Length: 150
Length: 393
Ligand code: FES
Ligand SMILES: [Fe+2]
Image (tube, rainbow over all chains, first blue to last red; front, top):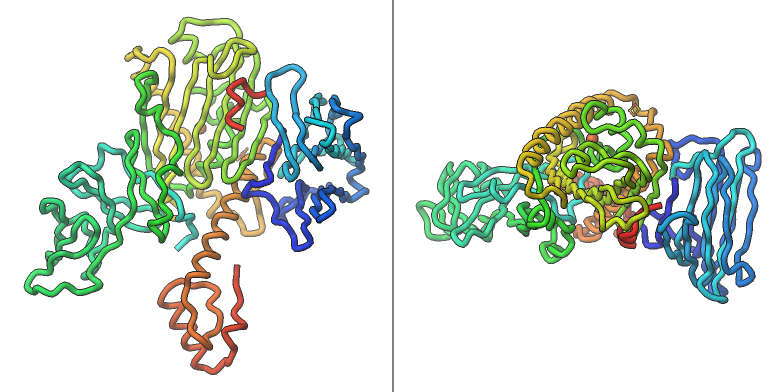
């Protein structure tokens, strides 16, 4: 499943008084009950926008990759069972699929999550040299696939 | 009363159901009388005479006015009482609520929110396919004895076609393809592309085609009540707007907490003049809807008897369902807050966190009289365009 949630979505988590907002998380409701906990938060301050990740390391490990002008176009491969979250920090980024017409432009505050049991590839292109994006890759430690229900 | 989102337009009836003979409809536990006046305009009033609550729908039309069938109060199309038998003075409170109404493409929409100034017809989703000569449509409507939310879930997760509609429209492979969910404001889009599959029988039979096609379906849910299903087949790799297309409009109107109306229109842009195909579709889709109704009513019973500590086990295929439920909750919360802000507070009265009418007010008054002595200051408050026309992934 792919999930693109826009910053203005009415289902988005509320912004906290300190300017932070959870962009994507699992589980983020009491009744869901999956043990693999993770959340990615967007922080907005006068200095700009940043993102951070929190995981329960006994279930989920993660890597972070910052995309900036050096990676003006990046092919991301999501391995079987991993979850990838893409968040733009500045400017915007274009998400495309190598073998299809589907494409979407994402902006700061939007989140794009990919999950599933078979691996797949997407391309992230930064629109200009000012644009930066963060890519989080979450990998389960105790199960074959980190399935995700928002 | 259950919680309903009221600041929205709900489909109340088909245009041709509403004539100069008043009819009664229940929407979100509010009874409404619908009728037409002489210039053919449809009107919606509260179906409860201000005098002693007799349904106006049991009365009769006198020109553009409606006369209560019990003691003869007469109401104009704006809901104001214009005549009380046996006296010339009209009681000030002799008025019934008038609901903003908009008629479009064969549906009558009624605004259920408190403030008529918020009723903007441009908020009503596109329904032109019901009324476009380039499209042929078949219509159905049915009362389903389940909460409206179960119908929303049903339409957001079409993997049920492979099981529930096995013998009608089901194809085994639907759930094998991933979905792309997009959430923007109050709209949830669940898009599934099924590339290079045989043309389903509807297309194959009416268009005389075979071979493999790209098939897609995308449910666009305008939370809380309207779901448009965009589906079709295209030549492999071709843009979606060049395909054989189907638009299914689904307007779900809550009657009460456990019952809803399902208004349905299925329009296609191929074999438009094929009358036989239209008739076969009318019958076939009627059966499919009956399958859904049976399942939804059984599911409603399951929900009602499920212990409180058990919850749905949502899976990734339910991504759109999960998001839509959140939006629904957010809208309910927003309306509750707005209502609370509007509720007048008496100085010195304790907070009325649940402003639900006279009973709550009496209770608050009692508490205040008991000298709780809290100040008013202590009051607490509770509470890209579709597939870029170029196909999904
Ligand atoms: S599989 Fe969905 S209700 Fe049982
Ligand atoms: Fe169905």
